[in-house]
Length: 243
View 1 (tube, one colour):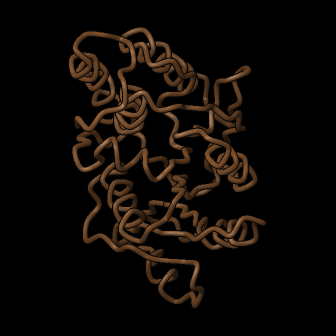
View 2 (cartoon, helix red, strand yellow):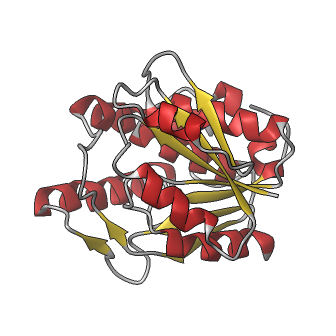
């Protein structure tokens, strides 16, 4: 079974049409909404829906995207899902691309990443400075750590269950952009296969971005921490049980 994990905070305008589109996909997917007690009623809306494929995980406080994903991944593993996909609630990740990511994992990838920067730049509605920051971050991550992917900060990903179990998600420390980098680096460091699937990323039209300078600084320093964790060796290791 496949579970799509979607963290939310004040996404009441975006979530109903997103849920409708995802549940209409030909793939038999389940959805887990990880809601940080949204004051706009996002979690309450999910509770009102009577669909056995739609689930809600409520958290008492807002403490970061990475923590929300970890909680969702742990829920997925506890409920025996084989493929776990993560995506944003704001339509920046298109539901139409979900089948491509699932197919990549079903075909053998341990992690499939929806990439904005493979085969060119595929971003719509971003200001130039945001695009420069994101592309620059990708080069920075690759240069420091050797992580051989084009979009290390992207958050549209599909995981094989065994991958999440092996990289010990309970030990992941970062939260924002750093979280996305750390998760991919742990996967690569274990020697798992990573496939990038080209997508078109569209910035949100409703709501506000969760981006902050704290998130940027966390990612900047996390990259060096990952290099030291890898023993200053920018290359993947064999699969093993180390955290």
